[in-house]
Each structure stands twice: as C-alpha cells, then as structure tokens.
Length: 178
Image 1 (cartoon, rainbow, N blue to C red):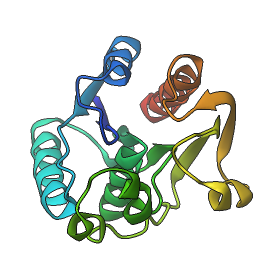
Image 2 (cartoon, helix red, strand yellow):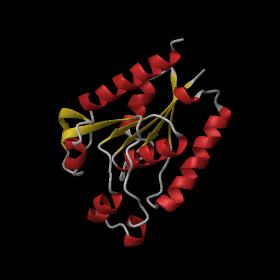
Image 3 (cartoon, rainbow, N blue to C red):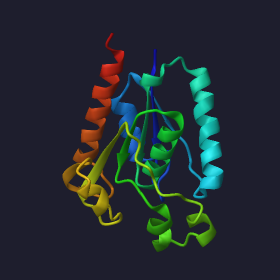
Image 4 (cartoon, rainbow, N blue to C red):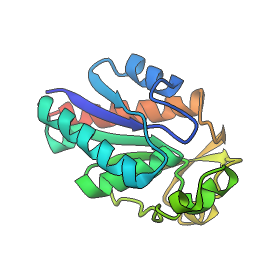
C-alpha cells in the first residue's frame, strides 16, 4: 500500500519548490503530490479537492496512510483540507489569518476576505520558526502546542525542514507497522 503525502506550498512558491524535491528524494517509499494553488480560496479549494479525490481514487490507500503537509499559506490549505477530510497534517509556520497576513501583498480585498481563520486540526502537528519574520503566530506559540524550531526563519529551509522530513518518516513508518 502506498503512502501519500500532499504538500501545499505557500504564497509565492510552487509545486516545483526545493521542499517538494526534498520530500520526493527523502521519502522514496511515499507518493508525493503538490499542485499549483490559486490565490483565491473560492477557486483553490474546489480545485484541490478534485485533485486530491482523483489521487485517492487512483491510489490504493487507507485513511491512516495519507498526510497533508503545508507551509505558510499552504499550511492554511493543509489544515483546512485536513479538517474537511479528517486526515492528519503537519503545518509549518501556518497563516492562521490569511485575510491579515496577505495584506502586505497586492491581493484584492475580495480575495483576502474569502479566507476564514484557520482552525488547527486536532490531529495536526504544528512547527513554528523561532524567528518567523513573516507570520505573527505569538498566540499560537503561547498555546504551548506547537514545536518551536530554534534558529528557523519563515522559509523553514535546510535543517528545520529536515526535522519535518524526519517526522514524516516516523509517521509513515508507524502506518506501515501491523
């Protein structure tokens, strides 16, 4: 049975990012999927659901062999979809309030207002950069539930992302054990 990882990239990134490449190289026993994400959630969510459901129909799987992973705005998508599908997720520097975090970019108000606040899924693991220069997740940090990664910044590249890959491996190993 294949293990499926759906990776959702952040604003300004793409499915061709180095994070996606690293996931594919580091998790050869898993199928890694990443899709382009429209900035408008009214367009993106139906498109992503269609693509996810297409993969889930084509790939033999059980619910515990599917994981959503996302970074920044992609973590909003990963968390929102994890809530929708009841699947586990790893959220990295999540944009918990995209309507606010997207203000710094030239995103129309009508699109920013289409985003709801992120409800962190119960079965989510949240990783936050100690030095995130983009997201203000102080309230989330204060909740005590996220994993704070020393030295990491918003990009969460290099060693910080290696921690996430290690955790995905552990989760994928857990599901392959009888």
